[in-house]
Length: 330
Ligand SMILES: [Zn+2]
Ligand SMILES: [Zn+2]
Ligand SMILES: [Zn+2]
Image 1 (tube, rainbow, N blue to C red):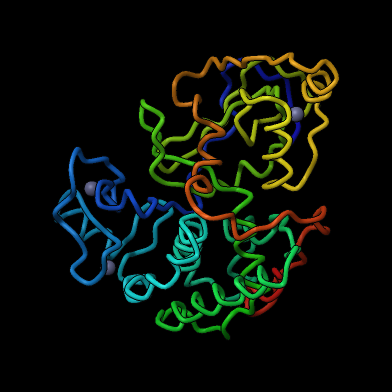
Image 2: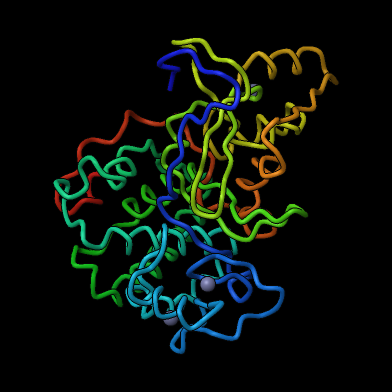
């Protein structure tokens, strides 16, 4: 994305809702699944049928079951599937968390059955995201993904809104790949704890820089992208996908592992050449920004490796979907 006109510091460039939102498994008993408020202790109001949805009040439970909330499908749509979620936990927190988010995304778009429904909507934006094909370094990685996919297809078979043929391993990988490159940690507490993640489609339209001129500020279910400096018309607008306060080798590894490119921004080039020079970035936007990149990393820490291995550069953008909508995404 480039600036269409002169931009001043603190200008809000975009303010958009999350495409899908999900609390991490380990926090689901402390965060209301409907209004996303954080409780000081374990929530006592819960879905009577599954272990996945806890609420701050009866009103939140009722509303969420029927209507869902921003980025979160009506719970009635996913409850039956979530009762069979346990087998996916053995593939690690990272995998389980991204598949949990994928289930929300699929359930949110349950009424969109073909490309006509998706066109010009958030679903259309999601379908157009670049994804990365599998590039397994060992046969056992492909075998594990096949087992993960089979378990996820079992979940989908429990969903009365899923009318399409079961997605193949590659189709599921393509869906997860789109999410994985566009999820950020959210629900950031003052002490830096992150207890959920969300996919923000608009972030995908901003290129990465380790010295970005914009910053992504995340509320629970919205992302605002705000200019940090004056930007002239025609100049690229950039955000940092990762923790820009880390050393150059760590930044480049994160970007290569999870975003599939080598960063040659001026800062990376200078720091790689000069060795120890490390610039501490200070954002003007306040505390919500401190954990910007940590939010992206957090789902992967403490769990097994991401289901997405290092992959070669992406192919051209996805072609226009045809029925069923996910078939053209693989
Ligand atoms: Zn609530
Ligand atoms: Zn439930
Ligand atoms: Zn860089």
